[in-house]
Length: 41
View 1 (tube, rainbow, N blue to C red):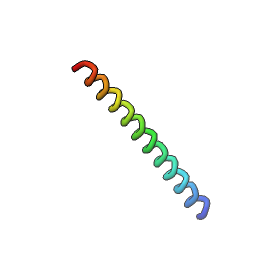
View 2 (tube, rainbow, N blue to C red):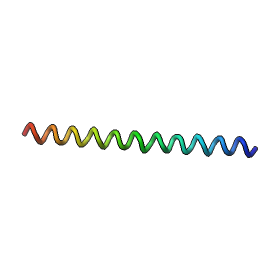
View 3 (tube, rainbow, N blue to C red):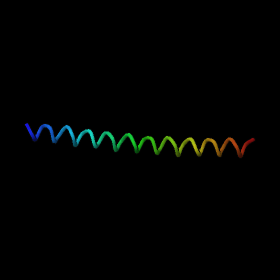
View 4 (tube, rainbow, N blue to C red):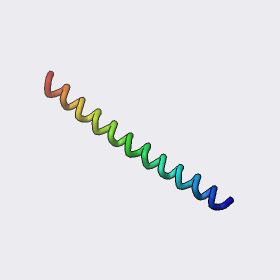
């Protein structure tokens, strides 16, 4: 029982890490696109 609960918690932390990672990537891409558009105006 405890082992199963621990596994769920580990999976949740892993998903949270992936969420923050993808969020950071999206923000970086947005900055690149914005700066690219500003340079082209």
